[in-house]
Image (cartoon, rainbow, N blue to C red; front, side):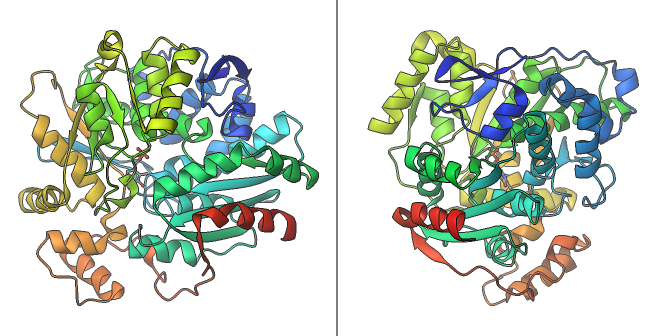
Length: 494
Ligand SMILES: *Cc1c(COP(=O)(O)O)cnc(C)c1O
């Protein structure tokens, strides 16, 4: 099994090459040439550790890595960096299950993949005998940046450059990024939104002059964004692992189909769920939950993807995205993997800001249900769930929870529902406190964390200990047009 580009099906590479490159050279995204079928004995698998499950999945999807190499990557990634030995525990809250993906070093779900990506990249370089320095170019809506730097800080042979939207991330997210240590880390805020940062980063990836200069400096770009299959594949693991935990608890029968409800921005997390289903996991529906930037909700209801609308800053900033990168992969599969048709749609997206998928393909999206929650509904959901179950959700998780509430009466949604919790409430204390009617406006960041601690009784995660007193190491803010020269400067001077 190899990987091929969505924009040119004849452009094929191995898994390790796809991880090194990030984006395909033709501007497309790599997808599996065929989705491996994973046959699991659940009796056995219900006793697996997270690491054991990871090996089964990674082996199937990263076929040119040896078992030894994968084991080493897995052991290095999923260790006591996580504050729970289960790594991704599942808990019952009300009628639903919650899969907690925030027990890693930066308390957001990005850690699930970004804790292993540096090891996969290092191994991929070895497999391909590639000695070039990797310049990890990353646009972040708040969580990827920190999680990627936590993984790549001081990793030899890499430099990491993170661009985030000034004013577009939570105060804790910003503090996490600007205090990042490591000689090879560079954090720069831009005057613009996440889409501006992401589209410029994609442009830089395809900038031939820049590529040439990098080459002369013995370097190459790679990506820590979810356009990299090295991000997507490790995310498939926790869907299987969630299922195994439900079997182990006796909550489901082996073979019973379950639903996953996923708060969505760049469509990476939910695309991994789609691959889990296509590789054989018993999944009924995938709920695509959006905030006010509901391009995907509109697509699933109309067949038209339209980014021509105002960009909303919400209380779930990691989902403030209008150009959802990974959706290109789903559309490619849905239209029968025709790279010419796909390229035309993507051309429409860049020239007109919208595209329409033909009617005859609409049934190919039937694995998905979509719903959205605005800021007020998100707040109410945090409040309702706390009142009912004393469980505190972060705003992203609450968007998904509210989406479930809106869809709950639909007949199609049969079977248990697992909501993916993508961040700790400690990452968004202001939004959470205000949802719980504890007016945070006159509180300092520190007081907000203390108030949240008092009401939740959840221990402080290591990620916030000492965070507010840490030295600020990154202070630069630039215009979007200056991103290229910043990159050039970093590549050639430091
Ligand atoms: C990144 C992120 C999301 C969205 O995930 P995608 O893979 O971009 O869809 C949701 N919640 C949180 C907390 C995130 O950091």
